[in-house]
Image 1 (cartoon, rainbow, N blue to C red):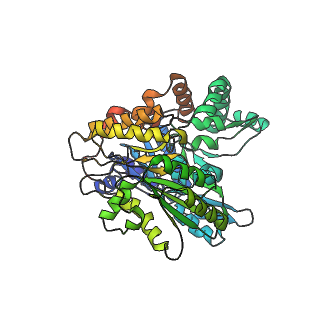
Image 2: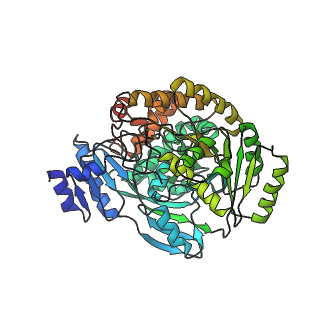
Image 3: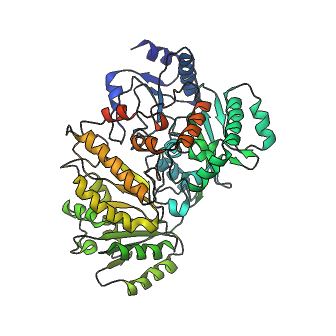
Length: 528
């Protein structure tokens, strides 16, 4: 064992590893990249993290930088969980610390997963209504702030977080709270990193007031730190928004207080198929007006692939060679909503199919819901590598975007099946690539650039549903305005003076490094 790992093991209760087998296990996330760390730490407390960060900060002050990446479940698709330095995993910080049923508040460690938290809350008929991956950690959800399939109705993780505890790069602990003008002035005079953050951030917000207002009005992506626009409200200031989508570049989230909501007892589902996207979109608009819990659209190619794998979906797909499938889920006023959906049947073309959940159709709809998992894991002739995923598109430009995809398919010789959440305006493209192909990195970057171009051309944003990480930064760092880039760089420097917190992610991502670290072997991660 090396000197650094041995010293950190003496400092902490948790373990620090530098053995090759452990490092290899943390060299992949769910992205197209592979980056092997030099150290992996599994802290068992906030105090462990503080000691590790204090050590790294002191080293950085002497000119010896150890890049630090915090990692939850390793589910990031843009390479933000990877580093060639030190990985700090929160997998052992997985406890529910306190709960208040009356106030519907819960305090948890950042490494608890969404599934674990919602299972505990269900005892009190409460939930955190997030439609993302159930194995994602709460800290990871905040760090990536994804637009999930429930976001259209419930607004995403940002709506449910009350306070955040963060270990800053120098090992100090910050507790976020909305502070009034007098409180901001008082904090700005404190002689510690928190005081410096408050003081300098106030100055930056004032100096960039016009730019920040423009970001708030027009920004539809999460590249950089656009949530800085939500930190100031009147004379009050709250640092919490800055950590949403920051991907561990400003500090390490260790504890979170969340506000839960009551579980809706009954769920009803609807599946409809359409040969023409224009007709599908009219149906989507009508259903979206009913405020469904979930409203998704899928290229029928996705269900066709599931059929080829044995799923019995012929009653849904019928004999359609092309078209789209719409899936809706309702969790309130079911009777009223379903009657409205049934009334829509009268105006649908004869070629369309509408299936409303009932005891007879329940199994059929269950089978359909599992078809996307088969599609994403159908890797016999290639891997569906995440590159152009979680992007925003305005509803009014979707039809034109679908036409653009047909042109892109021909030019890149890729099969592009669009799917995503219509209610959240969040979509994905997952064509197959052979990662063993020597030309994979070139083809991947060509697809990433072309996808970003047509998304922007149709008024969307490639980071509309999740931040840039290392991968999307290839295009976002080139397209971001100098004024916006300057603002975000200043924000990063305020928190992380020595640039040790995930420095090669977001604004600090190096395209050459990213491209040279594209995987050359298949992923061990399974999409579920």
